[in-house]
Length: 453
Image (cartoon, rainbow, N blue to C red):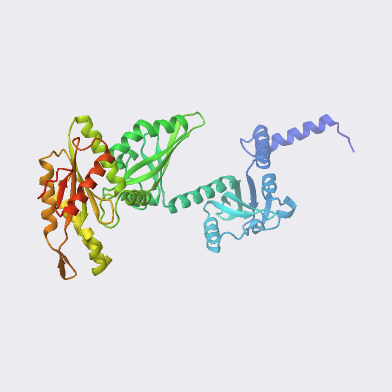
């Protein structure tokens, strides 16, 4: 047999390739080499891509997995080939989900969705999946090719975000986020309810400064927001306007959130309704300064107002009157008719005194059956006129529990600066005048002048 040299064999192979190319029409050696080269490139891409690639037959049996699949799932190629994708099924998604998946790809359509799968070590991962049916010239599905991206970190962040949103939605504090222009872009359920907005759906175009009273708007624009931008946060007491137009006091925190470049991206705020706390504080302050039985100023508030009145009179070189009023034989009312009747008498005395005097006058209960009155801008002529009004008011019978009784009072009066220039001196001299009136039965006295009526 004739032996051919290596060169001859190579030339013969080239001739055969050229002959095949001619028989194939326009297809030449270069396209054949290109197809082969592209195939190798494609294979290399699939092998090296960071996304998992799985190829199955029409029945779903795995024919190929790339290295990314092995890394993502922990299953080797040998463990996966011949199995079905149930290999990584976690059981976290119901049958209806998988029915929709199979109905889609069996109909020749592309499926896109997120699968919750389980790795070989039992850990759960989220995979953003695309499954594409490969259809031949006859229209039959011959393969399924799926690509998957591990989005577990993103989904964990989303789960955390959803938990945070759920927490914010259920908190009893108002939580809002505004953009750099101050427009509210997020408002939780408490905030929507407080401001009278729909509980769901898009927010109307509204700024934080639109839902606060004027004094708070000035505080926000002039101090709070600039301070939050400069220092990162601001806290203080402000107020909101609720859906009924009522001013609601709140304790508010404002935070500035910046981009990686340092620009303010948005502001967040938390506002807690402190109406109850304010009311409790006001009640405590009221109880500290008012008599609980008559709701009149008590001795503490009386002394405070007396000092203020005295300072004002000194500054303006004016005058004022001070009355000390003591009910006569009040102990007999308590002893004979009982303390409930006595309390009712004290309450009615307070009402009558306030009704008889000016709004600018102070009527206080400073002891058991003792009252005091401060008469600003009253001189020697005006004092007796006020006393007459008081006595007239008390002369009317007190109708209690179907019966009636008469209550009498003794009144002592002093004038500033005529009878003293210090508060304690005025109180002492008014008290002395009241006792002289009680002893003499005169009804009232102005200091030691023994003027009677």
